[in-house]
Length: 202
Image (tube, rainbow, N blue to C red; front, side, top):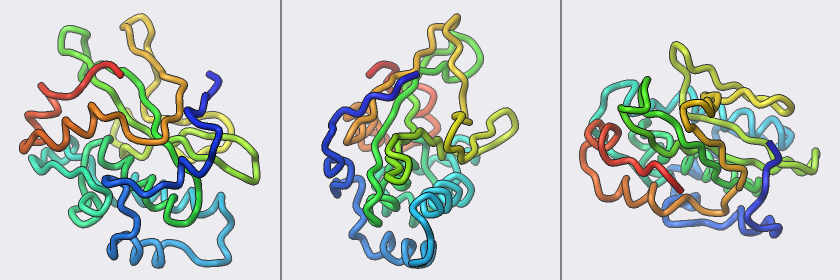
């Protein structure tokens, strides 16, 4: 699939947003711990990806009711669903001047269409040294889900099954989809939200 940036201005993918609050002290402290000056751009992307994937739990996987949204809160509590984890991944990279956007898939929530669909968020990252975008999914691995850092072939958490009306959206957005943020801000029980209140179309 050909990725399509929403904006050709890379500065749009570096902006600080309310939910991508990379000036927050906790984000800045983490940036200083994760990255060293000698690291290449690609090394920084890999380190940030693996940190968010492995060190921040997915709320459903740990059956936590806590809802996080802002990058700083996701980092503080070390948990969140994909919408929240993608905010943190973007914040860590935007903090070091690496353009990072938001990408979406429409997936079945569980195993059958009857159980419903939801939007899934992952990130698009612009690699200047390669002059192209790549997609990375820091959702968090578990049995049956194995996303990896890859510059060439995508190794994402989920493969699209078109026969079940799942969809891969090609656009790399400069900001998170507002429906996803509203879901996080309007709910207080992550498990209830995950089953019943996630948006299913862009």
